Length: 142
Image (tube, rainbow, N blue to C red; front, side, top):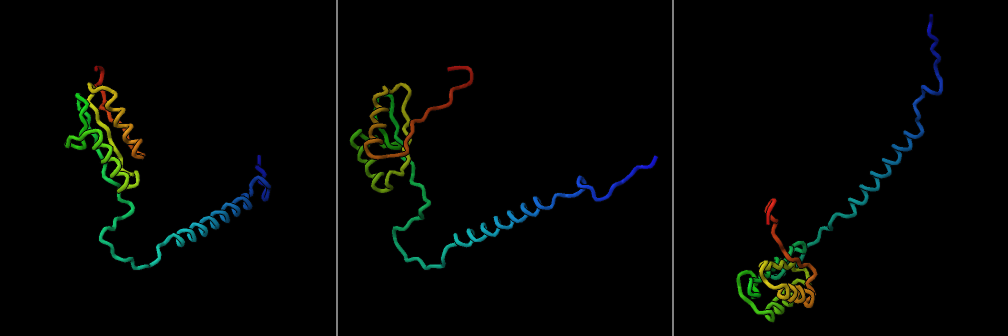
């Protein structure tokens, strides 16, 4: 028995119109993306010198506030009073406009009121980025 082959039927044609639309959309996308990339290039300017200049991407150093079991405050390893902590946080805000990250590390046996006082100092001095650290519990135990 002979098999009849019908040439030119609709089912055998490749849909060209959606293919052309897709290629045309890709062409427009890459043309626009190229124009945006060209617009973002920096202009060749000569910047003036400054003795206190810093790159704007420099992240301020983190301030670490430690609280021991008795409720004494330390900035790094230096003992400070709550008043001195407020002054240090205020200076950090003045120097970095609230961008200085503050990490509060408290002994687990310290009373919670000392931690709250440190958090309150951060809020009072407009420190936006502060957090209290903990450590990971050992597996299966206290």
